[in-house]
Image (cartoon, rainbow, N blue to C red; front, side, top):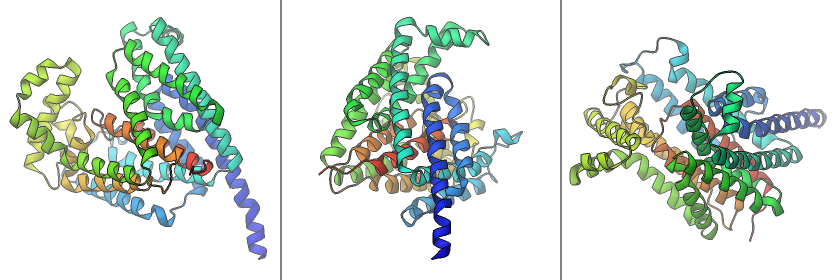
Length: 396
């Protein structure tokens, strides 16, 4: 009895500490999204480091934890046959992943442990900050990135086309996180906050030629609506679809190449998309040679000029580097994550989380899977999904 009473204040202090750390992180999210997306990796790592005492693996977390740990071990083993050998620790993906897994898990644990009042405050900070983020993107679309260029010029000159590309790229960040960001706002303000985020994302994406955020603005609300309408079945269907995506991507590319004029399709697309299809085709050829164990972590870097850095497709990169074993692990992780969104009644938090997950899956078809900022954004979605789920009541 005495021990339990004495421990209570300590737990309270930890919850308060986690809450303030998350408030600070929430305030930085829109700033990093606009000016420095690569900063999401150190941000999530810092949150995890500061909240390490909150690190827990609950019973319901064990399936995901086991999959992630097993995948990390397999990735480490695969480096023994990978043709890529990093010249310095900063270039080693396995070293980064070994630190990211516990630190990002710690950040997720902090979201659960945070003081409820401070957790709600962090969600409000995130919501209002991302609404401002959307309004800034709207202004940047009208002025062709005037604020971004002026800020950058204060410490380093930058070409106009590169600056505009950076602003367009930042619209992808808001396109990914806006459903959960808006969900965390005050109830009566949520529609207006969401509107500011959507308008800014769409305007910047259109102005600077980014198609993916435009697709996301259709996919996210549609996914949320479906999960709201069928709260139990829809997440399970999503889980199956995600597994099929990761397991079947090489077969899909092979099928298009075999039954259609792949080169004609490539040449009909914009240059960036055409290059991606070229990488995908080369990746499938290499995958066929080692379909089970793959070529080893980071092996994609060694397949130039057919593949530059990576295939720009997360499922194909996992197949190429970690083989079918890695692809099964990725599919299993998505099944576990998405089926946990199934609810007996409509849940706004679950619908918003599913919306963000659908955009993450869509964007993964064109991104490298081991990019630190991208993995950090995935962890950020998990953090704010848990925070929203902890503060929102299920609606009957």
